[in-house]
Image 1 (cartoon, helix red, strand yellow):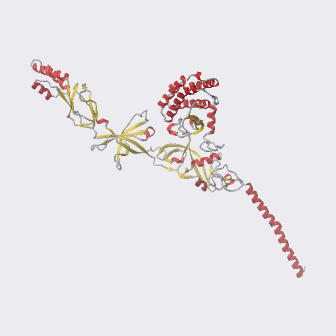
Image 2 (image 1 turned 135 degrees about the horizontal axis):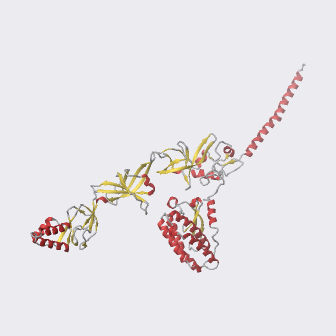
Image 3 (image 1 turned 60 degrees about the vertical axis):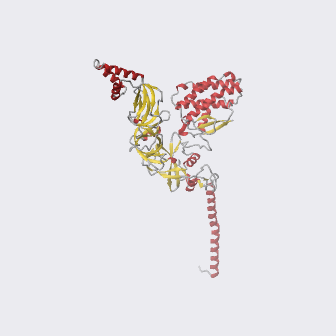
Length: 592
C-alpha cells in the first residue's frame, strides 16, 4: 500500500498521541499503586523503643521516656534474634550505660586484707614468784616496763618461818657429831626455800639468824605486770611480777571466718606498721588458732618477729596483705563483680550476642565461686571468650522485665511488673498471712497504750539484734518480750478492743512459746517474722506509739516469699539477712 506524505504525517501523529495517553493512563496507575502500597506499609508498621519495649506507636519518632529514636518493631520481631533475648541498639547501649567484657581466665589469686597488732611473745613471759613466805620489807622492782636482769635482787622478805628454820640450823649444827643426818635435813629445808649454801655457812659462822632474805630474778626481761607492793604478805609460790622477753614478739592478724579457708600455715604476709610510715615488713605465718572466737567470729594468725633492737612495741597496729592462690583443680574463669546480679537464690549475668540483625542480651544463670578482690570466680555457666554486660545490667534487666522476657525476678519470663514494685507477688502473700488479724482502727485507753510500751521496746531490741546477727542478744530480747507480754493486764482493754487484744495476745504467746529452745539465728528469724505480723496489725489497730513507725518489706526473706517488719526508723536495715544484705527492702507504709 502506498501512502502519500500527508497520510504518513497523520499516522505518526496518531501513534505519538497514543503513546502519550497510554503513559498517562497506565504509568500513573502504577505510580499511584506504588504510593498506596508504601502508605499501607507505613500505616501498618509498629515502632517501639529498644530500651522500653512497652512503647508502641504507628509512626517513627522519639521515645517519650528516654528520648531515643524509635525502631520498627518487625526489625526485632522478625529477625533471627532469640525470642528470650532483649535487643538493643548501640545508641541504646550508650544511653543505658551498658559496657561489656570478654570472659577470661583468672590467675586464681585472692588478695586478703588483714588487720592486727604487735603482741608480747607468750613463750617469753615468765612469772617471778616468791620462794619464801613472809612480808615484803623492801622491793626493788618499782614500775611496769622496768628491765630486770637475771640474778638481780628484786625484793627482801622477812619470814618468821625462815627465822625459825635458821634457829633449827644452829641447833642441829651444835649436835652435828651426834646427829649428822639432822643437820643435813635442816640444810635441805633451807635450800628448798632457795637459801644458798653460802648463806647457810654465813649463818652457822655468825651464830645468828638473818632477819631478811633476798629474792633474786630467775630470768631477764621487761616487767609487764606488778602484783605486790611494799608491806604485802606473800605466800610461797605467789607471783611478785611478770616479765617478758621482748627480743622476739608476735604479730597477730585477725582472720574472719569467711576467709579462713584461704589462709594456711606457711603463707607469706606483707605488712606495714602505722608507727613506721613508708616502711614495709614481711613474715611467714607460723600458727593459726584452731578455734573461732564465738563472739567476734574471728581466728588469729601468728607471725614471729625478731625484735632485738626493740623497735616493735606491743599494741602497735599492723595492716597486712596476703595473696592466696586457689587449688589447681578449681575453675579459674572470673568476671567483674558488677556483672553479677544476685537475688539470694540465684546469680545471673547477661550474655551479649551480635549478628547481622543487631545486638541482643540474654539472661543466663551462673554458679559463683569465691570473690577474688573485685572479681567473682565462675564455677559453672560461662565459657572463656563469651561476652557479658558488666555495667548497665540493671537497665538491661528492667527492659527484659517490661518485655515479659526472662529476668532476675522472673526467670521464666511472662507478666511484666511495672514501676517500683519491689516484689508485689510476695507482698500480697505476706498480706494474706495478716488477713486473719484485725487491723481496723480501734480506740484504747491511755493506760492500755502505756502497758504496751515495754512490749514494743523489747520488739525493737529483737529487731536490732537480728540486724547485727547477734544471736545471744536476740535470744535475750525475745525472752524479755515474752515476759513483757505476760505482764500486760487484759482488763485495760475494753469493749471491741478486748476481743482484738485477746487475739493478738494469743498469737504472740504461740510465737514465743518455745523461744527459750531456739538454737540458731535462722530459727529466731522465723519467729520474728510471725511476731512482726502481729505487731504490725496491732500498731495499725491501736496506734499505741507516740512517734511514727514504718512497715518495711523484704521480697527475698522467708525463702523468697517476702516478709515484713516494723521499724522506728525510715531507713531500711534488714533483720532477715543482717550484714549480708542489710539494705535489702523498702518502706511499704508509714503509720503516723
